[in-house]
Length: 177
Ligand SMILES: Nc1nc2c(ncn2[C@@H]2O[C@H](COP(=O)(O)OP(=O)(O)OP(=O)(O)O)[C@@H](O)[C@H]2O)c(=O)[nH]1
Ligand SMILES: [Mg+2]
Image (tube, rainbow, N blue to C red):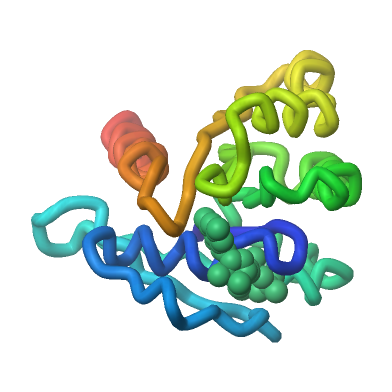
């Protein structure tokens, strides 16, 4: 199961909507904060049976995110790039996730979203504030970083590509087993 986490209002629900429906997204209706969980089925390609379910746990549930770690093989961590005030807190939450033994083998994707209302330099600032370079070195594990916008659809293909990687990895593992 892929778990989608990130601070309140960072853009998880709208991003998942965009991944579900790349063409049409109603930007006039604001998503309401997710109280509890939100399951999003995302098509990986046009063939049948190539859907995966991503489970978003709302930012207001952060104190109990860890209840959902068991059985999680991917983490999609969504950060609002336009809100640098929130980044330090987002980083602290991310460290907590990465330190959890249940997620030792999980693949990690960091999504810098709301790029439509951020300037490019903010991406670098965000990565600096998250201490990403240090984190990658200390953890010694891969963290994929992608820029996105649920409004414009930027990054959607890349995120789906990352989710597809999961499928490939799984079927390869099955073959070698
Ligand atoms: N400009 C812009 N606004 C966005 C984008 N993604 C989300 N938003 C807005 O940000 C607000 C919060 O979005 P949500 O998707 O509900 O955030 P969330 O991370 O699911 O929040 P919780 O469920 O409370 O954890 C909404 O008003 C969205 O319209 C984006 O890519 N660009
Ligand atoms: Mg939500």
